[in-house]
Length: 319
Image (cartoon, rainbow, N blue to C red; front, side):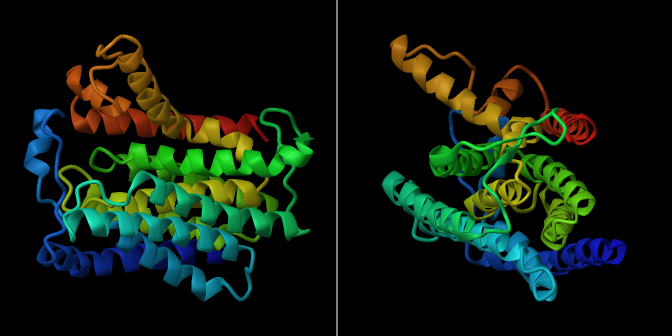
């Protein structure tokens, strides 16, 4: 088992590190540069033009590594397909925005339709797969599960789509989504190994791919993952949680995702109710902290440390 873990992490890391210097210049030649908001932190304006769509590098690393182990670990198939499915939606959104220069990318209904279709395919798999139950482990209560019966599928749609969009909102600072998600992937790896679930090659691949990607994505980033990466990572987290029967753990280990989404919802709702006032200085909430005087690296460090502590608590106390 240990050699599988080491090999999966090492292979994905190596692919990410080796292909980074190839893919990043290619993205630069395509002129797929990030456009920063004028009303955002002024320090972000210098990032305009930094290539995005770097999530391609993550997807290549994870896919190639997973395919090497897929014969002996068939349970990684649904996780890989969900990751690639949401990654494709993100890729199309990025491509339309930065290559075709349509600022909004995919229209909201198109993006949501794509997310619903990918989630529906995953729901079909889960409902018809006798090996993995939709019953969910209850955090902090050993050996207890909850089964919502006919509500399992609606809950699955809500949890998957919310997680995916939470990851998407988290991707707003150099290394933030990568650092937070590598902690979550490490948590799932520990659980997968401990329960002999048979999905550890892909959780390890995500750890390795993100560690390699961080070589180019930490401040000051030379590439951003874009929706290609953030939507894919959200899909990975949601699908992995379901394969481990742990969707109720997502609000714990991926609390940052939830806070990012809630901050946007609160900001929009407060703005409408008060006729133009803002609850936060800016949403998602990582920008609020920046405008309060925190450096970008401090926000990333704080959010990553918080995620690490929550993952440790879930691992030690939640099982």
